[in-house]
Every structure is written in C-alpha cells, then in structure tokens.
Image (cartoon, rainbow, N blue to C red; front, side, top):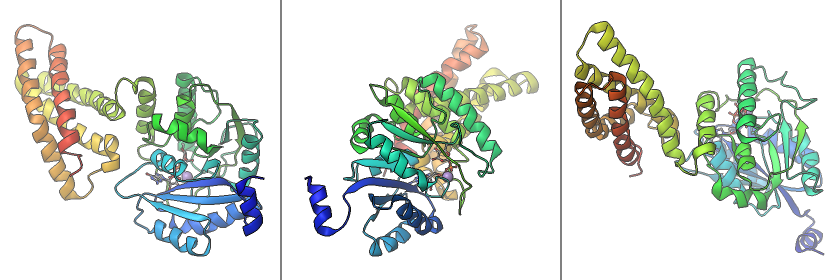
Length: 376
Ligand code: GDD
Ligand code: MN
C-alpha cells in the first residue's frame, strides 16, 4: 500500500493525483464558478487547483485565498513583477506534489469535463500528453465567437507543424495534461516566454512525446477579456524563431533581433523618404532614419521583448525612451559615422546603412537591456 493510499484511508481524502494549474491575469469573477465545475467534474479523483496569478489588479489572488480558506485544495502563487502564461505554468509544475499536472484557461473556455478522460489516458500509459484540441475531429469553435482568432490559430498551427514536426491539430492549445515529473524534467530547457507552452514542451522533449487529442468545444470566455489578443502573432513568431535558434542565440536577444529586423524596415522607409522624396543629403537622412527606427524599436521592445517588465506609466515610458535614446546614441554615432564613411567610399547606400545598423544594434542590446529595462 502506498503512503498516499494509506493517508487517504486515514484522513478520508483521496490521494492527490492531479494539479490543475490556472494561470490568471484578472480572472476574479471566473475563479469560484470554475473551481466548482472542476470539483464536480473530477468527482472522487484527488485534485488541487494552483492559481498562478501575476499580481492581477482585480484582486484575483485575494479571491483565490478567500476560496482556499474553506477549501485547502485551492492554492495560490502570487507573482510580483513577472508576466507570462508559460512562466506561470512552469511555476505551477514545480510547486505541486501531484503526479499529474493539467494547464487550463481560467475563463471557462476549457471544459473541465474532459479532465477525467485526459487523466485516464496519461495514467493508463496510452499517451504522454493529453491535449484538448479545438480543431480535432469532433471539436468545435462555434461558441468562441472569434473568427479572426480562429483564422490566426489555423495559420499558426500549420506553421508550427512545419517547423517542429509535431503533428497535432492544435499545438497552440492552452489545455493539456501530462505527468508532472516529465514537465519538470523539461522545464529548465523551456523558453518560458509567451504562451505556447505546449508547443515548447513537445519541441523540447528529446524522445517525441506521444500525444492523444481530445476534441474540445471551445467556449466563449465567461467574464473579462482575452490577454493574448494583442501580442499573440508576434509572440508566436518570436517563439518559433527561439525554438529554431534559441540554443545559439538567447531568447531575449532573439526577440530584440526580430524587433531590430523590423526596425531596419522602418529605417529604410524613412531613409527613402528623405533621400529620394525630400532630397536630403545622405548623412542627415541616415541620422533621421536612425532616430525614427530607434523610437520604433523602443516602442516595440517595450511591447514585446520586455513585455514582462513593460514600462507603463507616461513617466516610465518617457524616461525609458530617453534612456533608450541615450544608451543607443553611442551606437547611433558609430552607426552614422561608419555608414557615411562607407557610403562616401562608394558602397551602395543600402549596404552602407545596413553595416551602420549592425554596429549600432549590438550597443543597443547591451546597454538597453541593462539600463532601460534592467532591474534596479
Ligand atoms: N499568470 C498569468 N500571466 N496568466 C496569464 C497571463 C500572464 O501573463 N496571460 C494570460 N494569462 C491567463 C489568463 O488569465 C487565462 O486564464 C489564460 O492565461 C489564457 O489567457 P486568455 O486571455 O484566456 O487567452 P485566449 O483565450 O485569448 O487564448 C487561447 O488561445 C491560445 C492559443 O491561441 C487560450 O486557450 C490559450 O491558452 C491558448 O494558448
Ligand atoms: Mn481564454
């Protein structure tokens, strides 16, 4: 007889089998009814709910504590100054003793009714990971009411399949279940950024994980609004980039580089306008383009690369932008000087500009990650 079974017999509580991790960001209203639905769905299975809350302004963590007072199966991890669905899930994997973990949205889009069958499939060795899929045979997204997001998901899934070789109808699903030791074993190698934690787990595993899909009737969110709407597309692309090159180039730099590449486009557009349309001379055009691209890069890095440390108030943004420009001005100076020299020596203007940008961006990353978005 296992210790867990013995304890179950003496205390009357079933042994802990499953931890349901609920990453939350402003889900206060959704919590109590979801826990009730989970409880009902799991019946006699021993479970606990781990609310991993990123310090929601609506008091989600207080609500979780309130529920935990009368039901110790509910636990809460309140994270200060941190952000991200993947990171929250990983935190959950590492904070439970349950042999199995499930991750699901806290907004009632994921039906807890699937949990028992998902657990049985993994427990019985039928699969390593049980995935609730919005796009598997028999699933439906009719209740979602978001054709835009549905389309985006379709494209993202196809792309993810191509790049990772994982054949799944819904690799971006946020609802899945696996053994917690497997999750913890892979955790140190996960990127921990963004929302595509399942894809990350599958792509990181050395031996391919066996997956069983469960058709999900993806519902509309119960209360509040989606947190993934805004950064989702860029976040996804950055994540794929990270999976392909992440071992060589660290995630943060990969994101910074992706933003930088977009900045090059902005740079070229501005350069073109001044050079060809306004007839400004090259070094002025290059300087103005650099300044414009710098502002664009600050904005996008704040939005994407450093979204977990995003500068938010007008004051923070203003100071952040000023220090970004200051940190980059050394790089910008080298950029303009080198580009101008090369241009005057007869190098094509596009190539001259690119070399300047390359030299500038190394400075930008080194200084700004420390002085603009660094921890004080
Ligand atoms: N702790 C924490 N930190 N939780 C977060 C964060 C965060 O930064 N961002 C979102 N969440 C929580 C939300 O509160 C919710 O419980 C869950 O994570 C999913 O976020 P939603 O805002 O509900 O995402 P969605 O419904 O738009 O996105 C759906 O599709 C994605 C793929 O397209 C979900 O099913 C996702 O899980 C899925 O990855
Ligand atoms: Mn959701």
